Image (cartoon, rainbow, N blue to C red; front, side):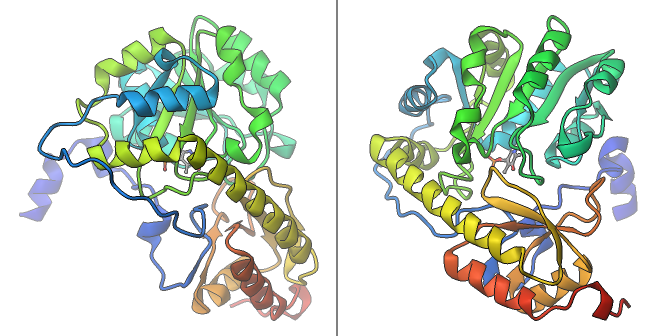
Length: 362
Ligand SMILES: *Cc1c(COP(=O)(O)O)cnc(C)c1O
């Protein structure tokens, strides 16, 4: 019975490995440093009592406040159920399954491939070169039939920015043929690097944003797509009629008030200070081989015996994210910046672990 149901499913869905979200991976930790969340809940209260009514498709106050925050026009902003929905709406609006392709540059965020596989769109990968920068000539050789190029800057899980001169070259190379989608999920941690001011020069530039990271609202599921009006108009054709519930729009508007934005900036300053402490401390641990610079609220590090480190901390209730399987990231774990106490507990646990020489691998 269940087998025949399986046979009814689309072939690409049968073959699909779903996104291994931090929540799906589980664990019984009390120090959650695996999903790049803000470590403390920000209190909000619902102000709308109109749940008998359908919500606005694009709640005006949320759109206007985000536009003001981003320095753009309201017509350049689309709000959706997280940036993840934005990733998928772009594919649904621009890619013909079985004909068009998307391209991205690993190691990077996992949802670009998962969304492409779910919808049944070919994806091409062009690995990054040193410093996780774009391999422009390899990209140029792969662009035939590509409609969307996803690039994540700062990049998850490596934490680096993509060189803006090379993004410009990519935009020139794709003009008229493909959209370039810059995923700025972590841009609040390095706001000077945003590409929003480039929208006036590039009709094919799209920027993804979220309230899940610096705004401390991962549980809200609210993200934004920024682009010129012709792109937004096409996405509006494929988005669900009511993508955001009334409580989500209510809280998003509060998070984007002057007070909400000021609070977010305080949180960012505190995360950046804690990141400094964590990076310095990691460099003094025997089991740490290399710590990579970060422009974000997480740090990637290479360990002498990463699976043992991961397991030891897991057993102590400290949950990190294993990046070992990503191309070029053998031995790497990603650590979200938690509270100062959480980072201290992590360092204390790492300090008990030996370097290579003393480790017996199973
Ligand atoms: C977290 C994350 C997202 C998803 O954001 P949501 O708004 O929570 O869907 C998108 N891109 C990157 C690179 C992320 O790390």
